[in-house]
Image (cartoon, rainbow, N blue to C red; front, side):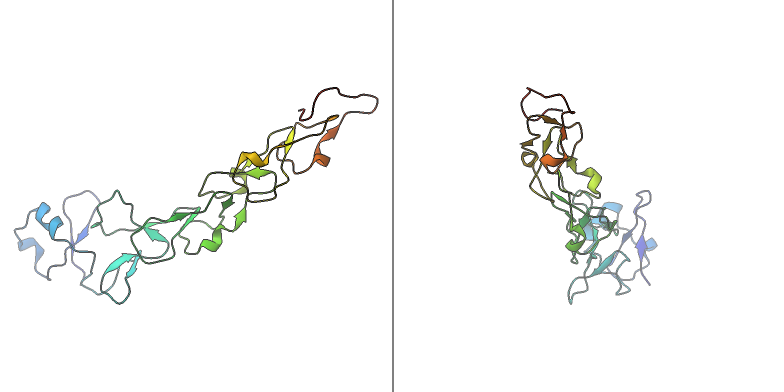
Length: 196
C-alpha cells in the first residue's frame, strides 16, 4: 500500500519512503520528513499516473508529455501536463520544449512528439515567438508590403517587398504584388511604391 504523508501544506501530499512504518507514531518533524524524501520511489512499485519509471531503475520521473517546474520542490508528487504549443518525449523531470518560431501546434496539451509542431505560419506571415497554437498568432505583413518568402518565416524582414508604384493595398498578409490594388481607371499615382 502506498504511504502518503500530509506534511501540513494545504492540498500537498508527499510520499514518505523510508519503510512502511506507522507514520503517525514517528517523531520526525515536518522539515525532517522533507529532508528524508528520495526521488518518488513508491512503495507499491508503481508510479503516479503522470510519472513513469526511469529506465530499469525503481525511480519515478515525469512521463512523456508531463514536466515538473524547476521552481517547485522536486519532492512533490505531482507532474504537470505540458501546455499547448510544447512537447516532451522522454521520461524526465525536465521542462517541456516549445514549438520553435515560425511553427505552431494545434494538438493540445500533453504532447509527446515534436511532429505536432509541423504547422507553419502561413505565407505572408511571420513570428519570432515560440509555443504558438494557431496560425492566427502569427503576424501578417503590414499593409502596402508583401512577402515572397513562403511559409514558416521567423522575421519581419521577409515583409520587405513594396506594392509597385501605381498600386496600393490596405490589406495585410499579402504574398505577391499581384494582390496589390491598381489605381482606378482614368487615374494615376505619382507616389512611390508601398502605398496603403
